[in-house]
Length: 44
Image (spheres, rainbow, N blue to C red):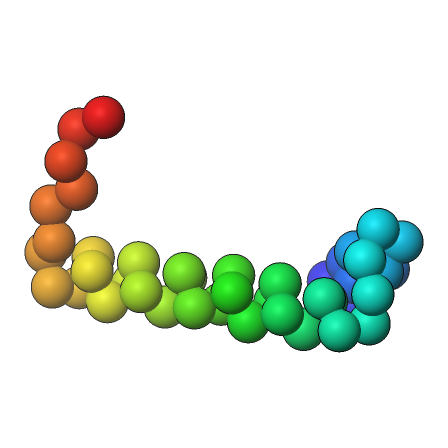
């Protein structure tokens, strides 16, 4: 959502917002690839 970055800027800097966004996007991408390949996650 457009306003999501405002809350992050209150506790971080303008540099941290893109960093957080890129890390979240990377994890999303890795999880989608793992799901597509049928990777089985071990039980905790």
